[in-house]
Length: 103
Image 1 (cartoon, rainbow, N blue to C red):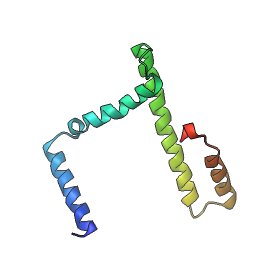
Image 2: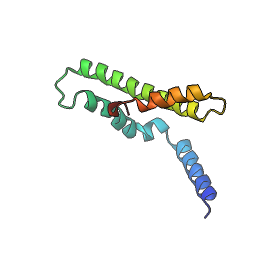
Image 3: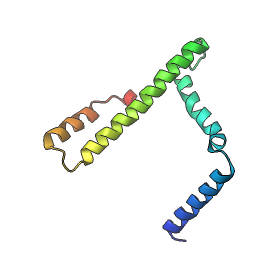
């Protein structure tokens, strides 16, 4: 079977699944695991009070998505055909100045 056919077959299967089940229910476990990651990041020993842990986890999640948006912006700027060499140099130097913890 060709790659395009396999892809189409997968899309059909996904559409059928979503027509029969609420996607929020089928992805609830994955979402919970993803969000728990931020709680584990800010308080791995669970020493903080729950409200403080949730507040910090919310900020860690916002930082995660803001970082993704920033990286996306950098990637789009690098690909932009109308980008001047000067702006491309700025983007290149900005992305190389990130620390490992920001990646």
